[in-house]
Length: 183
Length: 142
Image (cartoon, rainbow over all chains, first blue to last red; front, top):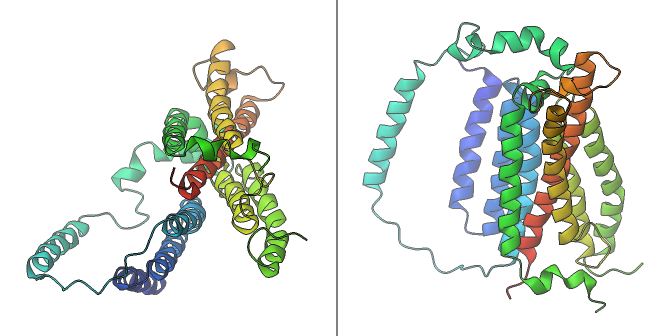
């Protein structure tokens, strides 16, 4: 049984996603996309994952929206007449089939918070029992991310750095050095 | 008050908001041990403050780190993280085994202290990369 607040959020998620897809104005779609992201953050918070919720609110909802606004600002909008809708019956059939398959598969998932679920029975008990004593971090997520799984996080940091270096390649040299010019 | 871009309302709003965003970012970094948050979220929040500054003040020199500074932040952040791992190796522990640092603290305390240093590195790296991505997006076509 879905808790009522979760159900309300799920309906709002679908509504804002549909509105963002249907919108004509890229900026309006973008704001709706940000709304979608904030609803995701609220959903994670309700599910008991404040760290994930925090990241979604800061990165997914705020930073990504700013980046998209900057990207739209630098491009020319193509607001022509609406393209005639294609025959969507095949797409609808595929979507319905995938939805039914996912719905059937979801029946096999463990109940939320089930202590006997496979994900909760492997290494999690040890982290929970001894994490605070071993890492000195009362926020278990920090202890796991930076200490127990330090290798993974270091790899993530290098992935992030690589992404930043790739972005540097598309910045024109004149723009890079502009701060040094007195003009 | 010279306004290169935006309006007096934007300028005043940003002036009120930005110090609080910075302090919140630092709080998230320093308090990541005890509450939700940590280096990653703190880096994003700090970058948000700088980008807000740039959005309101335009691209005048002197507002926030320039691209070269952002690159330096990203590189030094990842360097701090990898350096903490290699440092543990140098003191006889395993790679990224923070308890190997000879600090006058119990093992968990040493780990917590090293975790904070690593989190600061992550925050620097994330903030630097966010600023680089923003620069790439607003750069004019050459």
